[in-house]
Image 1: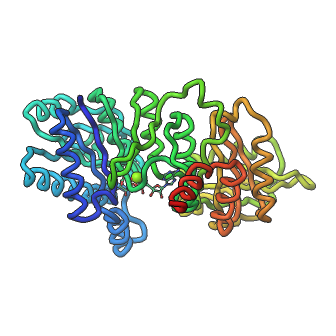
Image 2 (image 1 turned 90 degrees about the vertical axis):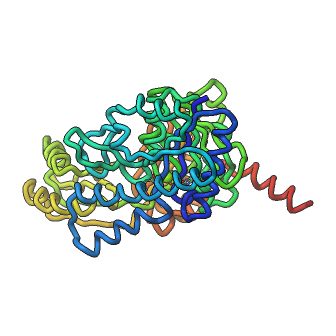
Image 3 (image 1 turned 45 degrees about the horizontal axis):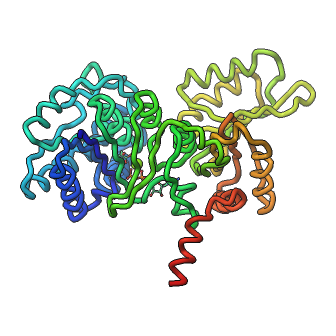
Length: 416
Ligand code: ADP
Ligand code: ASP
Ligand code: MG
């Protein structure tokens, strides 16, 4: 079998852990498999590199930022190859560029458009080597190094699994699988045996950082089944796969939280046809991604328009918004960077009713005010004050009784 394994930052966080990962890879190889490994940068390396750049400038060039951040993964691939070689197996490491991971040119959030080095990787596997590839990075048509967005090594792994038509794609991380919500926030969260691509895609896009959302888009497109599991034990994890008939029986699969939301309000906007079109066209031209939008009821020909962006987009947003407000004759713009978005996700919502109201009740029961709401066929999201974020997740998780199994398990072990 051809197996692609990806090890995240904490799984290769120090030399001991790198050796542990090396042993695990060798075990897979010696069981008769070809193994391609994708690794992230060690521990907090990527954050540390960002801090380093901050000490040089407030406004680094995006190209140089990608050049800098891609170095983290270059360290871990080399160390892992050395660890494997020391343990008696052959290994060879490659940067993204060396195995032809071609991307577009959008620095810091580049999309993979092609993997040109499948033949090269196959040739190394044929020689009996373990192939190790740097996650999170690629190269554009002009040979500039690009990165895929934070958490992007997952996407590298799925892209390689698709390109090589791998039999398995395993994502090794620091939790046992995908849980009903972040187990670091709700200790009663339950590990899921399976989750549908569409559910995982929503969860990831709405803040569950266990998987990079683009990796799920790609897995769905190419039919790659992903096994998310722990690098610290051998327990079976979670399968991310095509939806099956039974999945709709469970209404809410999980609760996601994103604490990095900011709210922008443009006040006293003239209430005329074409104004919203003009505002959002200018925002789009400024390359700012917006999420939820609310327009208040008009009063005497004026209205307030609020919308949310990711906190990291705020700097860019500020650059364009004051000008936009002046252009359309609004009275001003206010910014709030203390918002959180809490969401419930489940394909079962398509065929069940009363789900949104149960979520609102859960928030109301804790006195949490909802500032914005948005829904789709398989999710409901509420924007709230970030100080209430964890409380909200717990209340909603409780309301939909998502914590049952683990609580039971804990009770059993406590009774022993
Ligand atoms: P890696 O470095 O292995 O890529 P990440 O830190 O990117 O790991 O992702 C794993 C983390 O995702 C977990 O430690 C957990 O806190 C967080 N997480 C958020 N939501 C979930 C969820 N629903 N299930 C599991 N983990 C989650
Ligand atoms: N090292 C990168 C990050 O920290 C990519 C990854 O870990 O997937 O975001
Ligand atoms: Mg990750």
